[in-house]
Length: 367
Image (cartoon, rainbow, N blue to C red):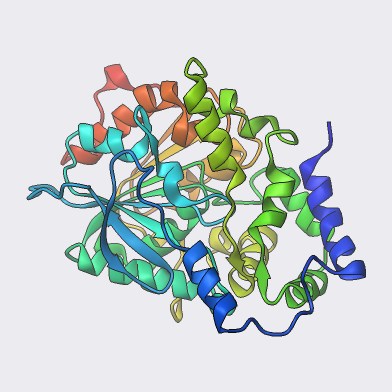
């Protein structure tokens, strides 16, 4: 079986030597830009629970429940990943939805950051653009919210909670890369073998973006066991659901080059978040500034974010309480797996609702 991380590493040198498809073309004309905007539009029809646009911002549309309710609880904002797949990973299907479980657990007011696929106009958007729009979204939800960060959305949520501790009620970090030096991982090894200049040159060839089609070629189910329907859904009894997953897995978002390069350097190579030197909207805010109670969820066989990289939160976030839970499974099963949603996420939903941020000892399976 081919190693996707090795292929990912080789991609950069190949791209530099021969260029990528359609690279070097003139700037897109008005018609091409319009096609890009249409392609980046959010398809709400497939979402299980959250299908109403609350506000639209440059980097995202903020989604809420299809039938909004007069909530009596603090809002819960799911901060979706912004890496390869679209944000519907958080609300994939009935019984395979983080948003659905949280709502069923008693949090009526649930929203989702549905990040836009990057158009050419977005190529210079950096991490601050996403933190800024996240801040606007939380203000629109009332100024304080519990954050549920999934994978790459986890480090973004953690950075935000450190920058604006008074705005975060509770913080859930699920499969989030927090301390990339906490353990060996193939993705950090791959980055170590490629220079910053090489990545920047490739991005310049690609018009300042990382194209989703290229990302998908390196992350398809044929290359990585973690991204099969069986591993992700923990339920393949419904052929239609499997086909739906395959279609979802084949869709990949384009990323702004500036954002990608900052993530590669600041998070994965330089480990700034764990070192306390991550720049967030004009200020370095160490993770020890987080005051919200934290719940960490990790997957025992996660090949993308190793358990030590996720659970390092315990030693880094010294200003608050941290509960850690490690579940059987792989990366995508943390967000789509029926068993994980039925067990761990039900407990998380209850934890989000409890005022003392505690879970009865009888229902804990922490390590």
